[in-house]
Length: 105
Image (cartoon, rainbow, N blue to C red):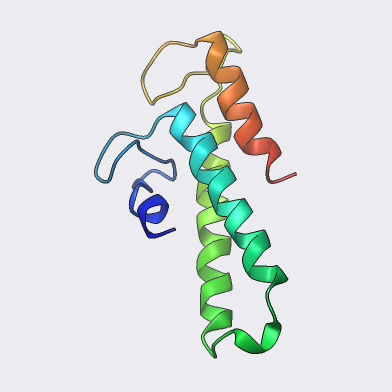
């Protein structure tokens, strides 16, 4: 998870590598990996968790809000979805962004 976390970007998306530009496909992969890991972690025995659980949940909530905003902001004035900030809409990103947002639903 450290690698996935290191690919988070300043604008709430995910890049393909640390320090890279957020991208629609990476957005989906980052969110899906985070959700799978979260579900795995929650399934572990509650007694194994440390005392900083509240801080971790706050951080996760903040990132979730940033990621949702990034995904929603990909819809352009033409109604299409762009995979990166400042780029034209492209139909393939409808899947990547839509699937990433669907993970939260």
